[in-house]
Amino acid sequence: MKIVSSDLKKGDLKLKIDDPEDLWYLSQVLDKGDLVTGKTTRKIKLSDSDSKTAVAKKTVTVKIQLEKQDFQPDLPSLRLLGLVKSEIEDIPKDSHQSIAVEIGSMISINKKWLNYQVKRLKDASELKKSDVLIVILDRSEANFALLKSHGYDYLSEIEGEVENKRVKQKLDKNFYLDVIEKMENYVDRYKIKTVILASPSFWKEDFLKELESKNVELANKIRLASCNTTGRAAIEEVLSRTEVKQVLKQDRIILETDLVDRLLMNISRETLSSYGFKHVEEAANAGAISTLLVTDKFLLEYKEKDEFERIENLMKLVEASHGEVNIISTEHDAGKKLQGLSGIGAILRYELK
Image 1 (cartoon, rainbow, N blue to C red):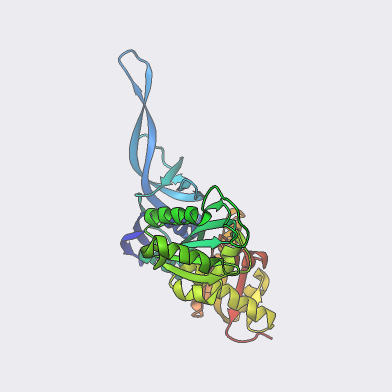
Image 2 (tube, rainbow, N blue to C red):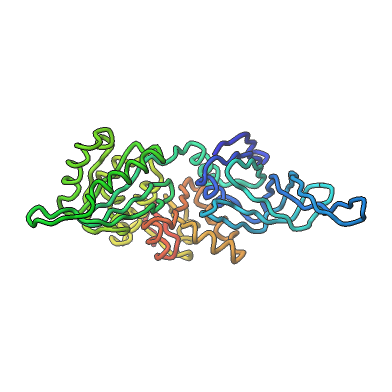
């Protein structure tokens, strides 16, 4: 994402969407009532010489007052729907109109910005594309995932079997070679700089020896980690490992996981914590919140119920008392844990009576 221009005193911000993750970030900061300007395609009725009605597509720039949004990560696309607020020929004012925001789109937003929203967009503008591949390996299966700022994309899995050296057997394929080929493809496609390789037992060391004999350059990108499980579940386990956090300390998912872990630890110790909207709101009114954690799903639920103003007021209270607001993605395990805990929690400065 590129911030093209900004005048926050007037509430104006102009953005260029460069990456699929930008759409997710944008969906988290847009609220009902915001004024959004962007390009859209309209069907215009025409008349030909035979008096038959024809239709032509015309691209126009339109300003809408946002009513709702629909984020489709698989496309990827963010569809914004609202009432037209600009004077445009063939488009009646206050009629319903949508704007499809995609890669390469340029949009302008006018709204009352909260500090956390501006920070989130600045984070997105400074965000580097993920260059970390996660590989989970055991004797007969390998799983591949690409780390993202707000979670990870599960790429694929392959099955095979490593030859049992103690038992003579013939295998149709060398499983390790299949894994190496898959890794090479992903490293080339996503410009991977670091590969986190994890496994139970000794499989990762055994595989690394094979890799070093086949592709030294790729072997040099490897960082080893341990896990007790396999498959998709192991990805979450690996991301919580200390050695992996050291490698990935700049990535958003690690920051969010650390924040949720701190909250859960405080809750387990029955100290400096609050969760559930009612209790968190009480802590915010007392100016006791140091760090507020809210899941993206929690925000979406309140937006859909037209009760977002309550959450917005709470976040304003936190910021007014110099607390920090963090939106936690539910695309990773830590976010799911927080969602299961009501979707909102806070780390406190001091205990409330």
